[in-house]
Length: 327
Image (cartoon, rainbow, N blue to C red; front, side, top):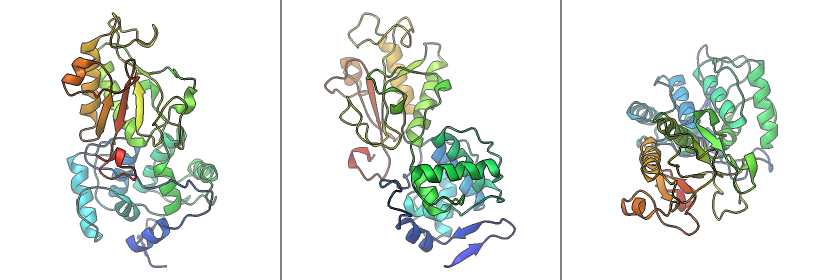
């Protein structure tokens, strides 16, 4: 198998052709059948973007690993793509991911290990030190994830492990100002969404909460590995998240859910929340279902049956297997 050995790094870099071949071959029949490398591009946020930034640094293109896909990351991706004979478009799809990921194991160190640790923390609700050192704790976390995913358990983060981990849904950071309401009886099991979806919504919530208008109530997002959620016709692919409108008393997390017709509905604050959601994910908000006619007339939300009492955010990517989620 052709490979490039990086001097002094202890890391094996797979060539794009070999990476593509490995990505096309599942490790076992029990690996996540729907797993794929989610496309990331300018405007995205979250753990997957941060992993890309760490991996770019590993390949000699350092950018600030803040989890925001901005102009500097776009430029670094284009340079990396050019160097590796990939389509130069600044979009990190499966082929670019396949060239970025590297095989690492216990004893390795560097930015690629930081990428792995950041992904494990967000996707498995861990608190690993993002140290860049593949230590015993990281090895144990990789093995536990491999067992969880139904792939070969060897502690080595290779292409199959990377693909399953990057695809795996993330859990929200409730400390961002999110209060979990679980209105439809699905509980915390329905709080999962893609890394980008949560990265983008968390940023929007932080911006909104900083205005002093209370926290943002979370309804349902998705299950940990996707699939149908009781009470919802969508939410199956981790890119739909429900939140509640804002109240005039800022008590939306303690005083119960309202509709846009309620006397305590705060249109101005809800408008601000919608604007923060859109601003945090430029080019990656497909639509927001909510039946307030004023916000609909302003082009901020879209009408849909049964969406008087919550905002249904649908995120999108430049490329997605389901056309409903293509920007």
